[in-house]
Length: 570
Image 1 (tube, rainbow, N blue to C red):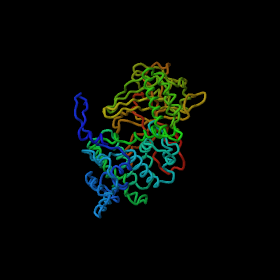
Image 2 (cartoon, rainbow, N blue to C red):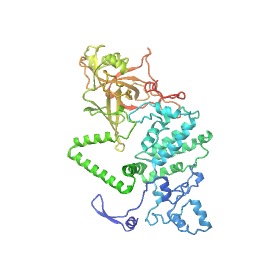
Image 3 (cartoon, helix red, strand yellow):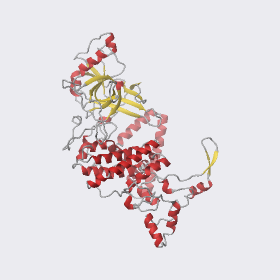
Image 4 (tube, rainbow, N blue to C red):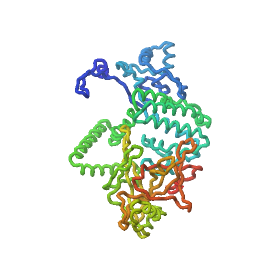
């Protein structure tokens, strides 16, 4: 630490962005570590807070306690070798361990206790959520119920499908935790008889999501405080249900420091330990596995050096011949496939795309892409009816054409039941948010049945028809979007003189979005039917779709088995 200490006292001349040379003093302002490492750095026992002097039996409260001060801690540590009665009492009250001198003792202008940053991975995702909240809610639900609900959850490209449930997952990563959190409130809704359980879980999930914001304002920090207060207001339900006897859990107490840490250091995603954890796998674990387990340190170093050499060669190939580099990269991905649960549902084929800019949605720019050549050619109406479940396709198409402005100007011949259509498997929405602080993302909408020999041979083993949000300009509508399920994305055949420059979409509608009094605070929809008992369907232009969406079943009874994909929406 001597170079860092000298730099903090004497400074070091550095070139600044304006090309001027200035004397810069380096000060330790932030330190990333998980809970055991933080306690070791703070020289305290692991049942104490490394930042404040909260007693071990009050971790479950929202009370404020004095912060740890470096000078007072160092003074106590110096007297820990031959402590008197008063010093022993102070060491016990502070929960100190005899670690002297700590590495930060001589760092100038540094307060190591206030430099400890929130750890989203271990404190939030793994600790508060997975190790505690999930376990409590699971014990309050019927045996295996939460597993069945996760296995029955409708598929979506942005979500992981837990095919075997969550109880049998052996190796958890930050990605799995986040995937669980996205649907957790919908998974436990209706699973217990106590609404306060849902309120407590909702408050804690609100806090978790707010803490991950890339940008914070005074309003978001106030919402974080409010969410944490709500959780402490409802948490007693777990004691009443005999799930917990107390809340003296250090990781729950760490949430008290999040707002102040964000105000002083910025959003915690910049201090997340998830990236170093990944490097631990890539650099240490894989290197050790590649060794013969004897004298493994030198072999691990050699492994890392070889991986870096391969990375440098890959960068050169990308510069020299991008096509060759892409082929090598594809081969490497095939040889080192790690996701054992990946299936052919989300595979993306190398296709050339057409694209156009749709009308902005809530100021967000949306660019829609689709294949230049529809991959499914000349599909007849019986195929659309049987395999795409487009039961009312032809009447809806006739209705769409009759309502079109071009048809009203000059009548065209209507399609017959002998028509065939070119069909797309997906469309891609490139969304660019209006705020430069929010990253853009890619949204995919699928309309893909399962493979049928000799009829639809080039498809995967699973069918998937996306649910989407479609613009709704109906007067008096509460929301400006409506939920529908995409069944067919198609082009008009050449026999129909009327032409459209974009694909058309056959959609089965759900009812208008409705707010409910549920403590989950989720919107509710149902399948929409016409007066004759048939599904409410229609055909719209593809640029009327603004986003894909994910629907979670409204669980009425405890599940005795896993629901099939076709049963979920029923």
